[in-house]
Amino acid sequence: MIARILTAAILAGCAAAHAAPPLTADELAVCARHVQQLRSESARILERNAQLDAQRERILARSRALEAAPQQPELEQRLALHQQRAQHRDETIAFNRKIERIRAEIAALNETWRDYDARCANRPYDRRDLEQLPPAAADAMRAGLADVRVPYIPDAMPTPPGEAY
Image 1 (spheres, one colour):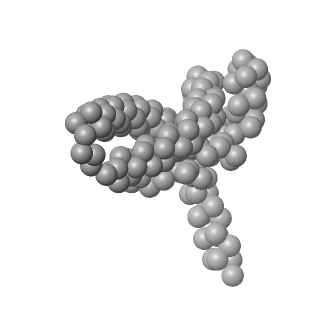
Image 2: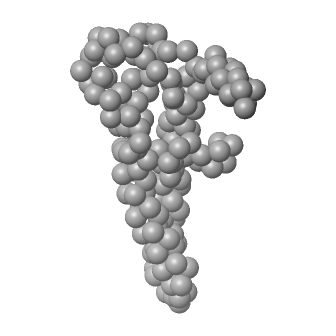
């Protein structure tokens, strides 16, 4: 019985020894910036993504309509359809560029999340250091990330972070 208690005490001591050290004041400030960025950028990107989804649906509907358009016998009508298709192609290319930009923004945000996870998550900090932060940064640290949905690109990440969507 005593051996079990001693073993449990030794294991608890080893676990405490391997726990991450407390954040320094500078590290806490970096972590607070990460939290602020993750909170604001996630919301902005998710909203933008919803707008792009709606735009994608409009583009797909227009593509189907143009593909289903019957060939007209009149040269003027054929030219008009050709012009509509060319304009639609240009709009689709511009949309794809928007998608690439938002993918780059998401990849950058994913990097911030990974950095936060590696350097900040589950690490204690001194309350006095928190009180020295600017009010917005301190508020962000107090709020944490539990309610934040971080968009991610599954291809770019081995595992999705936290409650990411």
